[in-house]
Image (cartoon, rainbow, N blue to C red; front, side):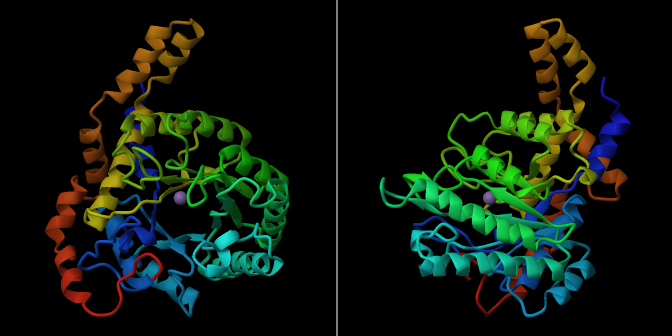
Length: 388
Ligand SMILES: [Mn+2]
């Protein structure tokens, strides 16, 4: 049996990073439905992220997105976050929203566009120096829509050159997280389409470059926990972008579409003793809340990850390894499923009460009046959202 006290301790120490953009308006390419009370400034997004942390106790940092969270004074923004009980996390770059990037950013055939995109990556590291952020998160929308449109191999050379410049600009305690995505917005070829491409570039770069797994960025049926296990063994798993999906990059609440997959992923993390913040994996959310209320949706996502983690921690590993060694297929599967089928909600309520939190974060949030207050206060100005 798993040691319950150790399980509780691990759950209490878990940290999940929320994304500033999930507090803003979002939608599909068909429609963005605006919500009352949505933040208008980076400070208001930080206040919302701090609220998620206040009710969950495990979300002490918020990732920023440049230029969406651009401010004049990042040190001041960092101090603002600290006053609210959280810190600024990963800095996300954006080389996909300018007209210049129609044919790509760092892989664009035009050297002037590549220079502009690479300069943005370097600017992001300047910002990290001021926010105290460790992680530079890179996602490139670069790709091709038609065979023959550009040279696949040359684009890899251009990508490598830009990554090298950014890598060489990193401080001793800073890292690159290189995200990959199968397709979209490009439909024929993507320049960083999969974990293998990201991994190979990270190996070429050096120890400060690691892979970020966005759970929504794979082909249907991909065994994500295998990727997790492989990258952990190589010491190259730096971060997650958690979300869930039924079809493509749906960006739904983590654990909503496939809680069993999330459990299998978290089991590999627990199996490698990689859950603790000291191990260095940044467990981030990357989601959009198009139709549901944003703050409680993010609280729910955090709780879903906690539940998957609790189940993973409850796996009787001695029994599992014994069954595996004996070649007992049914017993091994049964040990894993016993943990998955455990109702861990009472355990998590205990963990929260022990930490001085309300056992039911969503109910506590609703009772707090925060939602009513932001709806009343955040009148006028331009709501944050895609492109704003
Ligand atoms: Mn992502």
